[in-house]
Image (cartoon, rainbow, N blue to C red; front, side, top):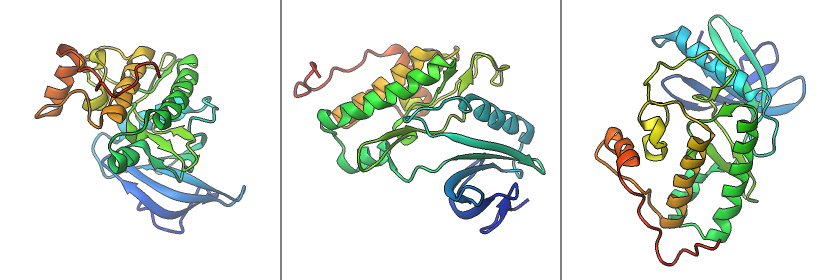
Length: 240
């Protein structure tokens, strides 16, 4: 099934504008005609390999997000499958990401960055309290409004303690630049893994660059395991 503007999903959600398209699926800005509100619609592509495995991953994302009601987590409203396509209906977050802010400002004033980190930590705490590990905490998945309100997004590779295993043992999950040492070694991620990744996010905001670099993602992931964390610049107030 090809998705087009104006199409209704589940006789309720109208596709208004494609926002992004990737290897696994596409994300649309949509409209819930029953409740009269804007939504985000994440749809799984059917023209890719391993569709069933990707559909299981989308179901897991829906399962893991379903009970995470918190102001700092983008809400899941509905999940629906039709003709082999899975649809996640989510809260539409018009804010820019922390990655956009980093790209624009390079180094973030600590008094501005700290509230963002605190809100992100609060959202992660709620997820962890429900047994859900995000596993891909990074600036692109932290949305920040003009007033400084934070929403954590994309639980697409998240893991829940009460779900069956989807990823294979030893499989590396996460983004190399922000991955925890245990994830980089193919071990099971924990709540501490998410906190480590948030620490990398904080380092980047304070310093204007990430703590570890490398020629390839494998090199960067290995650096998280083997290299000491570079010290913060002297101008960063460690008492904050």
